[in-house]
Length: 143
Image 1 (cartoon, rainbow, N blue to C red):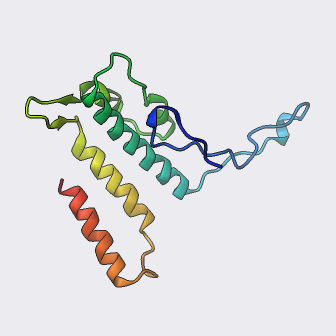
Image 2: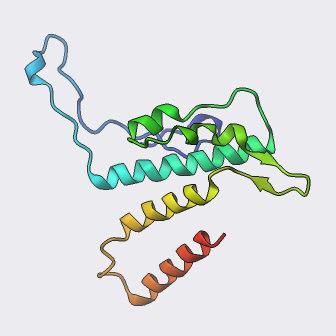
């Protein structure tokens, strides 16, 4: 069951499907290694970039001195770009009311790549659905 996340986070909390270690008194050799499927990793990367974009947008609307850091998630996902940690802090609202979020092209590109990884096997989908999906993706990438 998904638990609501505090602060309007778009990153859901998934329960751990497998035990990560031995029970009380268990031997270290009894531990099971947790292996994540590529789909789960792509999904977590997608949620990271969505949360990063949302954090930048929230900070541009209402700047706060203490912003929740996504550094731990970035490192856990193996994303070696420390510049992304500054996205919320550098996001601002301009005089004309528009938002300025740093690295927006890169973030949207990564969101698109994550979505594309889920659509790797679209041979079973109807051609109209595939075309609509690609049109929507091009529209998001063109923003």
